[in-house]
Image (cartoon, rainbow, N blue to C red; front, side, top):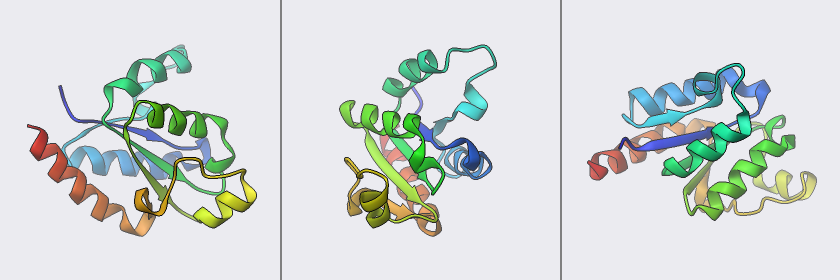
Length: 135
């Protein structure tokens, strides 16, 4: 089974989320699951998420001023946490302190699993090492 990574994002951030998915696929050789590519018109979104998230090893969540207001993003983080998946939050335009103060908390996000968008390439290198070790 391929090393799968679930990508969570808000609707406004879909272009950048696609780029993250492509980097995960092309550079780390992992199999990204992202709604843009993997959920088709007419699919029940909830069913697809419940079906695919347990098949994944990691959750990459793209947190921006727009996505932190989306319930589905926080639901996916919580589900990944319960499934004991590795959670990596990629921040752009928002900080952990802002999420804590203005958005109702940060739940299971800590400085150890959060990086800025500028650090995403480093994450992909680490991911590629995990993928290689999984083979």
